[in-house]
Length: 300
Image (cartoon, rainbow, N blue to C red; front, side, top):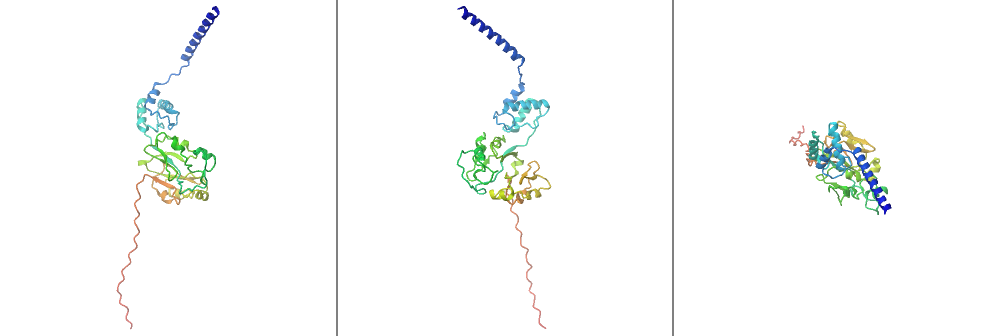
């Protein structure tokens, strides 16, 4: 009985000492969180999509508080909540809301079933990542969309769907939050988060093929062949660059004149959300001068 009693007392003393030590340590090394972080986190949509560049909404809230202490919220944007949420965040932190241009996901591939015929049959897991690991996939293009819909499954907002006719993903601009989850899911990097543009208008090279012209043209009828004609049409604004046999349009420099779209011999450049072009006036044939009745010269 004495042994049991001694053991209980010893254990009790050990527990008491341990609790006291833990209490002292917790007070000494306690991390006191800024209450503003919780306030900012409350107004965020809690999508935890990572589109802001931080690990979840709590991480973004902490980054906003740190940025506010530094004096500016520039560069901070919640893609899901957009400008309205950022205005609330700025109000909590006593800062002026910084206007940010809206963005949208763009699928930079026009390799439809018609433009990019299938030359192989892939009989494996329905996954773009798996198909990409096996090589070219089921077409001759090593850079285009693989068509398995990994991006669709990663979108939390239902903004992506696969078009059964083209075999390509389609972005619903009204639902897209530009969180970037689809871009991260694409193993070939054909989905880009770009500036949405005024009235949603933008001009984009819908190709990601970096092969030389002849090879790219053989793989896809609508591929960029790196001819540089678009670059020449934009020498004044320098919005188009040609690198690794592929043209790219800088959205911030583009004036949306659409001259590059007309110059592209392959139709790889597409303009989004523009009104239909007005038909060009047909050149009227010059009217011929009516024949005058000339009396034949009389023979002398």
